[in-house]
Image (cartoon, rainbow, N blue to C red):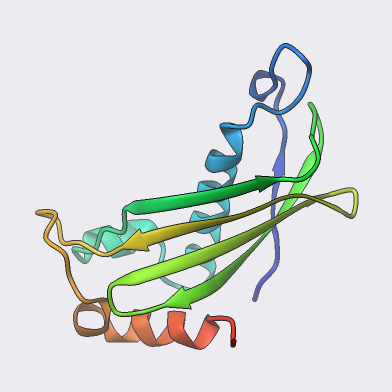
Length: 137
């Protein structure tokens, strides 16, 4: 189930030095996260139609090696931690077999009006799935 998402670096995603601009890695993380949630049966569209919004509250990105135009970046997405009010997603990005970036994003859960909510109460099936996918300490 955890097939990596692949992003091919576009020319416009590079900077004057020919390297993938650091800000694009956040977009790659979102692409991979959207793909991951879709594959586990809880895509963003479904969640939002059911009244659940999951904003990003923190991001940590550790750049290891640069990538350039036309590189294919494989992005492995994992549930690092899951609680009723917070979800931490981990990302490992590789290119040509080498790790180019490790990152995490932390999300909370709110309703359509922006009020905090317990995922365990609001969407128990989704909460159980995420917890079952969480890395064991």
